[in-house]
Length: 336
Image (cartoon, rainbow, N blue to C red; front, side, top):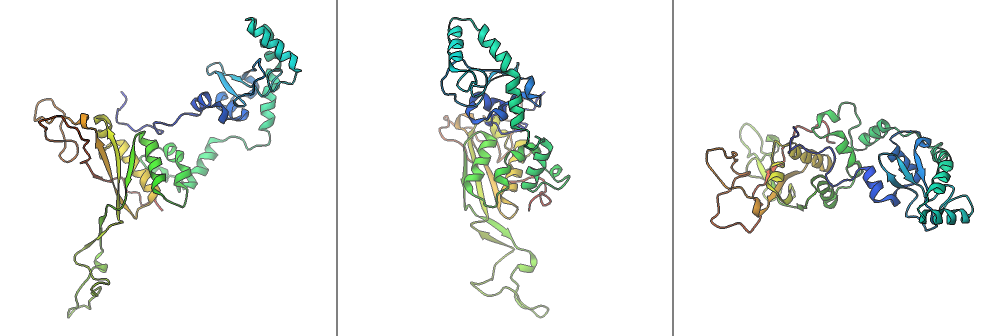
């Protein structure tokens, strides 16, 4: 049985290459479309069809049949806007198609199918062979996970990390880039609240100490380096990631201990490093607040996380009360 709270291997609102080719064929070249639809097969084994009209095509290729591997190639073939035969052949094919007689069109496509496959192979002849392992190793190095066995320290699938390699591999860090990464992962609204502040613990060697008979004082200049206590407040030490409003099921999947919570924390750590602290703030939609019940068969609730006192009236405001400090496995070995 599938765990409903298990984090997906890829972001929720990301289309697969095959879905992108189906919806936006204009973004793909003919070589790319064959690579996506062929799944490693020889290009001459695919079925190529042409259009019987002279209208300017949207792109170099478009899917006709995903299961049969048929690919529409309006820019190359015997007929069509990119056909090599004289234009009157395309006009004749168009006329036959309008009379619901596709025999001539199918025959010409059959003759030109192998030529189209060879044309695709020629286009990739002097290009590096497509190698998924080589690509993964390069992207792993870009995000700092190129050392063998380093990615195993993460609970997040490596493929999910490599999907964000373009952002994680950059030297500059920005709120908008982080927001985009989290929005792609959660498929919902994300807000980054900056400068919420946090306490920074000072090691014993950096705490203020008055001079005594046994030791000289240190950090005792008022207004310069003196501090009271073992921690100091820093307005830039922490930010909050606000997610939602969310359904109850989605809210619970973001609580500590859930795979998606760990995944988001690890991705944020890879993006910002270990120097800055942050917290996740999942916002529960007003209509999703569960009723509080003691005992019985009700699902146990956790104070401060997913339990609210029962209101006498229906709630009209979302609940942003859960502010969860980011907790994930030790990432010192994988964060620069």
